[in-house]
Amino acid sequence: MKILHVIESGGFYGAERVLIELMLGLKVLDHDVALLSFGYKGQEEKEFEIICRQHGIAVKSIRVNKLESFCISRYIKYFAEKNNFDVVHSHGYKFNILFGLMLKGNRFKCFCCTVHGYVSAPKFSKMAFYQYLDKYSLKQLNRIFLVSQHMTSLPSIQELESNQYTVIENGIGGYMPICTVEERLITFLHNKTTRLMAVGRLAAEKSFDTLIDALPKLIENDPKTVLVIFGAGSEEHRLRDQITQLDLTEHVLLFGFVESLLSYFNHFNVFVMPSITEGTPIALLEAMQARIPCVVTSVGGMPHMLGYGRGGWIVPPKDPLALQIAISKSLIQNQNQIKTSFSYDRVMHEFNYIHMSRQYLDGYQSMLTLATGSK
Image (cartoon, rainbow, N blue to C red):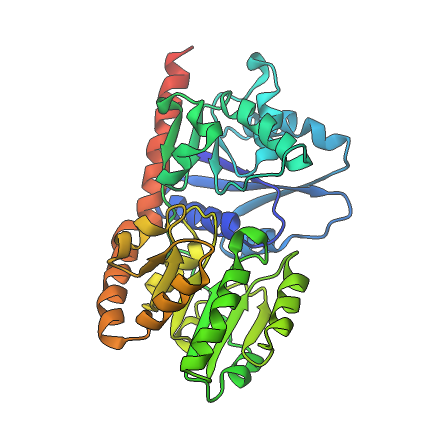
């Protein structure tokens, strides 16, 4: 089978990580994959394009101006048909919208998408308008893939027929870069006894402010407690102000974006994900694989990932006290060893990239069968 994946990447974040795991898995299973990567004129080669080429994935980079971007769906159809692809798989709402607005007779035969995440947009905002269009466009696709069962409760999914979407949880294990740990982290962690880490975009939905609010009590119990947050984003200034106001500048490090954290996990005692919305986060899967105790909020697919408490500690979102208590419990060795063993086994058997790729292949085959039968 030949599968064309389409994305407009803004970096190497969750969607990109899932996508490269999927493409590597499909290659292992002996299927042809390629990436069609869009950007605007003047943009240099993107980080995700470089990473894909390094891993032997065929990449076609397209750069367009604003006006040309409205014709992307036609170009995708032309490119897919010219190169005999069986399936086009979108990883962004822009492509879903432009495809959905095409006349039915002009669309590619098998067009699907993965909904990697969903953030509620303020009313009357540009993002709310895009989400409205996306909700309409999803109905026009051959298949929608969701990364967690929780996403089936989204309003845009509730309007679909149950046979239009499939839940396929993320998997890892194919993409395994090892990066050198930066010296500034080693310096910051020197002589610290309680080392907490968090990962994600510095955005409101990640709720890192809640985690920072939980720190003072933890520091009372152990003055050598520190927190390192890996990621970048629009909330950085607000978080820095909060850190200063709480007099935590010696205890919190906003480290910035790191392409791969695989070499970093063994420097920490606890992994914390205090988000108010999530799908099936790759960073949590990596932490589970690294056998580090995990404390998460009861949102999205995270409770299921941790076996509803068997593999970690689960607390309500936006609750600093509950977070602080759970982190304290996670530091007790005889408790965390049982949970980390459970979470490690769960990743290796249920959240494996080959298992994920086989499920996507089943979805592709189902689409092709329906498309052929409808002719």
